[in-house]
Length: 342
Image 1 (spheres, rainbow, N blue to C red):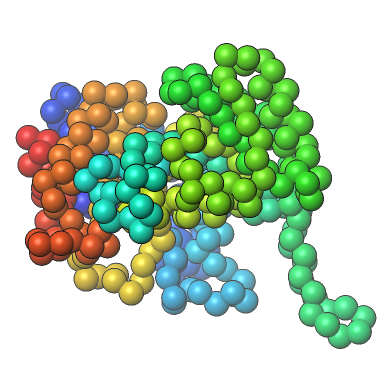
Image 2 (image 1 turned 45 degrees about the horizontal axis):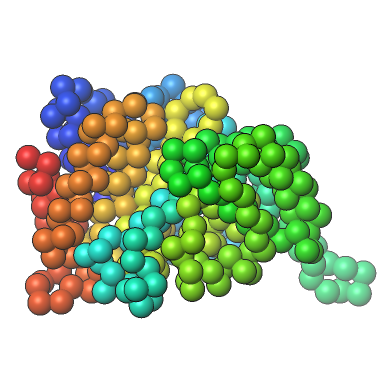
């Protein structure tokens, strides 16, 4: 699907008088097959030297043994950490033309448009070294560590408040402060940041409540900020509102250096090579690349409006449950976006 996204980016860039240079590198499963590791030092260095990184899915059943010493996801985590991209932006937008695709009632999701800011380089996925072994009585035991420092929380929360200032001036912080000490630190630091921005409303809610309200009252949200694991889970849930995981892009940003852009969905091995995957999330990730890394707002907006017009015209890939028209393949859907760009 990245090849389809590149076609759109090149055309949109050309319309704005820009040129792009793409350099392809291996990461994830294909890197394991060739180099024995999920991310080489050379590839990480090339990514650091780029203006931005556009990435596809990294896994698949071939590398899916949970006991394997090397897994594709290790490359993804190492890339995020190596690029120091601590804020993962995942926009959740329900388009009026797709309200009938979601299993949620149309009146409940009408006008939904919120941004999830997920902390990306701390928390459970980046805790102390994992442990696995046996206890004295012979039982198998595994340990993962959920750890946050105040500066890690502060920088991603400040990022969320900055975004909210340009939207509807509301931040919802999601934690599990009734149980977890790390969440109590999260809530404390978030409250401190909130006091520095009295013009922006701040709510604190528990993650279980957030999971319910994303389905029952999604129109209440503007900017959600949360930790690494909670953000991972909640945005997969929120894709139901938009109709498909194939609709949600993402941008991972830090203080300096290149941003990292990717669809939120995985590799979908059941349809790999069939040419039927939805390219919209990859294309919209490219639009976010234009906006946040290259400062090409005009071109980013042109891509997003082209996608809206394509969907408004009733064009659908198979995941969007087309009614009355045949499902379009990956290339055909991209062709529609390119025509609307013209």
